[in-house]
Image (cartoon, rainbow, N blue to C red):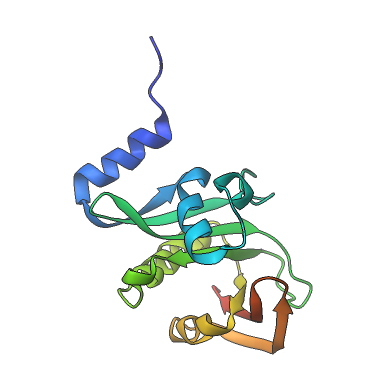
Length: 166
């Protein structure tokens, strides 16, 4: 007899319990549709949406589900940025929300959920490369900017942002 997939069971439990606005840990593969649709339109397949850090043990993914569909995702990984002095650092990558769900508070829910987890892990700072159009979103959540805008080829202008957890 086949063992049921543990991640899928947890995902379904989340859906069955809350149905809407369920913020949970999700699998890497569950991030791919939004990554492709929202962030990386220059890519052609879900396979191309996998990051080399996605399946490292310390990496985790968070998603918000509404009416049976993942509507917002974020990936959080242990990564140092030499700009910051803090020893225990995490990076936020591949944050995406369905365009029709923009300004619904789902991105905020993901960041707040992840920050609780990061505080439990005794992480001192969360940083990200924020797209130019997302800087205001992160500022509303208490992130600060560092330095000037810089260009990431095929994607556009970004700014280094950070949030001190301690």
